[in-house]
Image 1 (cartoon, rainbow, N blue to C red):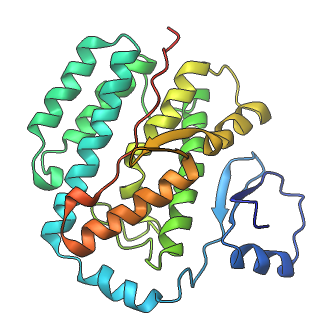
Image 2 (image 1 turned 45 degrees about the vertical axis):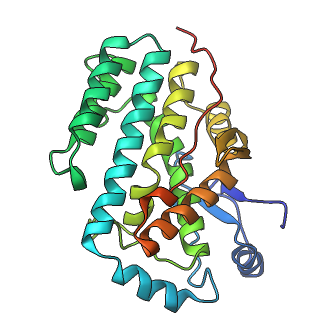
Length: 264
């Protein structure tokens, strides 16, 4: 179990014992359960991810609105920046420049929703003018599956550090158990987008799912070192918590990708 970071239970016919579930939680293995369509539908979330959970929760509750808004602005701007970089690599120069303009226009807390406007331009540039994220299609199925895997990893790291996923910086939906995870993962969505765009899936079955799960074994550059994606998420989360607790956004470590040519 020490060598396992994440376990995806793809089939509803699988039986798993309480003893194994307890051991997986103890080893902080992220366990993701899928429904009858093999889409992620739930996961194990440890109640006690860290020995000082109660102290961390008090700190999380005490985070000021100003620093939360500022950190969210940094995260949103970084997401748009990575989207712009990817569009430029894909030969979408005009749309990439539009996103760069949104970065310059972003305000504290992103009160004018530059992140939302950028997302519309970004997805339409990649997948066509008629594409919407609500549409029932192979592309959205792949994106949603990949995002779910990344989200689960953020849930794992947040709880492992002793914080709770419900209390977000920007996301605050009362029905969302993972508001903080949704905040922190935003710049990492582009990794999934890149995979879906480059592979141009015409179906979404076992091989495509395994390809997206395999993104956890890809490498990125963070804090001047090459790290597997899962470990990069850990370093990034820790830096975010340091930035929030010390009111110092300069402590945030954002990742970068090794440049690869996009197949058009």
